Image 1 (cartoon, chains in turn orange, green):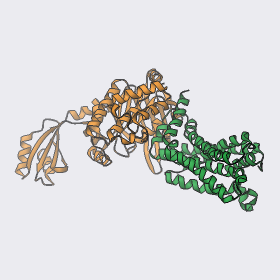
Image 2 (tube, chains in turn orange, yellow; image 1 turned 180 degrees about the vertical axis):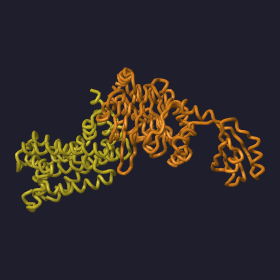
Image 3 (cartoon, chains in turn cyan, green; image 1 turned 90 degrees about the horizontal axis):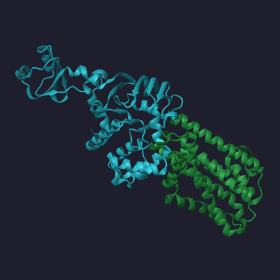
Image 4 (spheres, chains in turn red, yellow; image 1 turned 90 degrees about the vertical axis):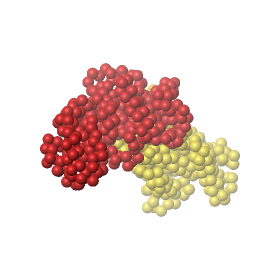
Length: 336
Length: 245
């Protein structure tokens, strides 16, 4: 079945996902408000936004776990708006929470998930073994899922999502709540899947993750897409900027205002922990800045040149502090 | 074919994960055994009374066996979100729910045979009309399972499902004519008896074991079948409305 699925979707020259004016309301809350986008075949598409922005609701509508109030969905050229089952052969889904069966072993979980897609016994057993090897879980294949660590659970959940070798994979927050080493390994696995030709729809609140992995990114805020573009196009305007971060002791609250007056061609932003962010269209003059600060009793303990990142773009476009967004999410148990 | 691979594997997974677990096997054996013993001692009618007790204990064993399990296999999985995995599989919802309920139906049928096997050692079962009794046992198991399904999909917590089940099960036992003939019930309760699926199942069992059914077998089977279809369709409707938001 899975080989058939890949062949069919490859025959479709257009988009792996095409969404028009998708909307969903839960009571008083407009979770998704007229979202439109398209994901090209073979693309790794990032869907970024803060908690409650509508990322998971969008995935649920695309995969058939939620019914849209309005709009059209096409998956692999198939109109799934009224019939979400029509394209479920083509898709793999990795939800934001590991939801395999705690009472089954890792191996049995994978075999069971393969059977749900109609794979024959020999094929699913071979595929399960292959994925356990790929994900470094062969040693714990016979251990019950309930006994897995969080990172292992996440890896097995991703393996279950691709057990039928789907040409289109939905990954909802794949690295949330796991340790750094596991997150790195999972990112590598995602990159490998992308290289192998799988179209990937990735939601994440880790902006660095999207920056590292994605071809294109959509920013969603309060149910609306505020920007969609390629990584290069998103980063290009801010890469022309020069950014520096100063760590200052004994700074007074009005210091950034005084700096702005003294250095009108620079932009200053006071950050938490005595940090001052300086932006300019040309190289930042460190010496005059340090002297100015020291003359006013502040002690500059570090001046670091910052590489502008997607996070800056996100903050600029979405008006949401990425750092705050990450911290909120990490309260749920995640670390990057 | 591929859909049936999924169907079969869901059934096998549930059997392994839930129904064949030692606590459930012992529940499936002890519960009907306890019911049989309790009614046998209470009746005080000796061995000759076994056949008259059999329809009651068979039906009650099926009812409790099936409805108790659905609260776990459906509500628990929905709560843990592993049910989403099934909803994401490319199989029709109808087939998926049939797969999820088949284990409970088989468990209910197996429960029914515990008192029957016990009775075979104590009484002569040669006059039992098996051609009516066996289809009735299967249909009672299907109807009870679908009733359990309806309860399971209408609740969000396992304890809610269990409590809600008792709300239906206990009144039904006493209103369906298993232990008290419907004619002896207060007049205002009698119409209620006829909207309970177990009433028709119990009537077939009374007829098959003791030749004292009050409704034609054909009508009983039609009514039971209609209840099965209605309960299943209603459960699917609730799943579509409440689970696929």
